[in-house]
Image (cartoon, rainbow, N blue to C red; front, side):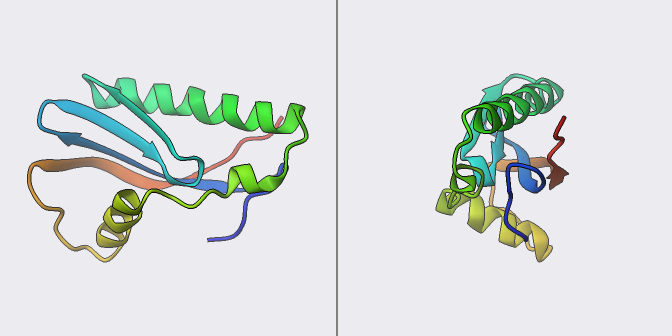
Length: 104
């Protein structure tokens, strides 16, 4: 995966359920949202990603904030998903993938 800049990039996103709670993780930003519905999580993550990028651009922050080291548990889950390996119960994955960052 290429490095994110203040002008282009992408992030890895995983949405999953653990017990009765849905979670969404944006790996490169270390953002985690929780809720009761995976679609709610998708919308919440989209807002969080846009807000995060907008703040970084306005403040002219270093691109390092857009390329954080992911939490080990999410990095491990991502690798298993990419390799088609099973994720241990009680975790149920709703979706995972890369999302391009949108810059206005």
